[in-house]
Image (tube, rainbow, N blue to C red; front, side, top):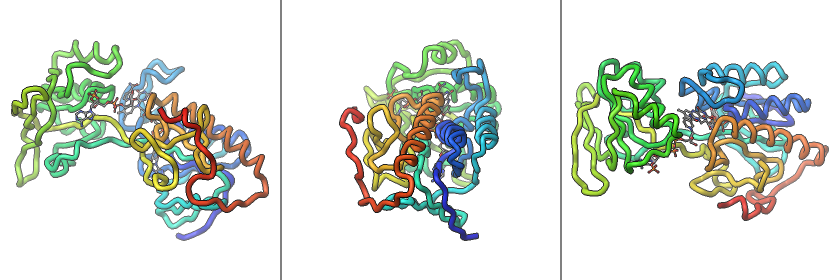
Amino acid sequence: MSETRHMKVLIIGSGPAGYTAAVYASRAMLNPVLVQGIEPGGQLTTTTEVENWPGDTEVQGPDLMIRMQEHAKAMGTEIIGDIITDLDLGQRPFTAKGDGGTTYMADAVILATGARAKWLGLPSEEKFKGFGVSACATCDGFFYRGQEIVVVGGGNTAVEEALFLTNFASKVTLVHRRDELRAEKILIDRLMKNPKIEPLWFHELEEVTGTENPLGVEGVKLRHTQTGEITEIAAKGVFIAIGHAPSNELVKDVLETHMGGYVVTKPDSTETSIPGVFAAGDLTDHKYRQAVTSAGMGCMAALEAERFLAETAGEETSLPLGYGAEIGSSAAE
Ligand code: FAD
Ligand code: NAP
């Protein structure tokens, strides 16, 4: 149904940044509306144990995100299952179009659209996506009981995925392009002690191989990064875990970005180059990319939105599309 609604604060995204902004904006009596997007709860819904969320020695990612949603709701946030497909930041109130037909008019916008998995861009990766190639072990690991699996990457995600997949797989080969992992020490320690995991250093994925009918993965061709030698190993599943890129599609043409698409904010602030538009979490953070830092930025965004709305009460401004305010150069490393 198409309808037009007006609100003081629109929060786009339902990860730790969005829900924390929602809690603070609700407590500031701003009656925020939060649009959840295609992945309600964000990236933590694609993992299992989270061990670094303060207050919980161990919590399941999806459970934590349900608790955050309930917290935001209890404080008074209206949570909507919709996807923003278009965002006009050229004038205030800002206009967001929802996939469900709703038009959201907002005096301030908090962008918390986070990040999503990167892919290698190989034709064979694309061909077998959903047929043996995946970027989410918690979603797809169950299909590989008793099978051999390859995980590509060397960060926290790759190591956690490899560890998780040992619950199902007979063997997990962790393919990394260097001989040093960038994952946390505690995770590396667990990886090295796991008898089902074999790290394969200095290798990159060259091609995923498999059958045509039915479409399915049978193995991978790997290239040695130093000698160029090609090795083939058998695998029924290939998990790509090579990092995440910011989900900036709504704003990449109007807001300043850097470091591969992360939205630039003023130093020590979530203010973007357009007054009244705030960015928090993995969308803007190329450095820490943690749940707790995203939540912290969500808090900052709500407090800054509250101050902005108090200072501009009653104003409706036409802004030139693009750069309403100058961004400090120290924000860009
Ligand atoms: P995200 O969690 O990325 O959420 C983005 C939200 O934006 C989603 O709800 C999405 O639906 C929404 N969205 C996107 N586009 C639109 C749109 N057009 N319209 C409406 N909504 C939209 N961090 C830790 O601290 N500890 C961990 O143990 C940990 N484990 C992880 C395990 C995995 C497998 C992964 C992938 C990440 C992990 N992280 C962990 C990192 C952590 O998940 C992120 O730092 C955090 O989720 C970022 O929060 P966010 O709110 O910025 O965005
Ligand atoms: P990441 O830290 O950026 O690591 C990406 C890994 O993939 C790196 O090892 C990188 O290799 C490799 N890689 C990148 N491009 C590649 C390519 N084209 N070919 C082959 N390998 C490639 O990403 P992440 O592991 O997804 O983590 C993202 C963020 O989420 C991080 O901040 C992380 O701390 C956080 N996170 C936290 C937890 C936790 O706290 N437990 C869990 C998961 C994620 P190089 O090392 O050679 O660059």
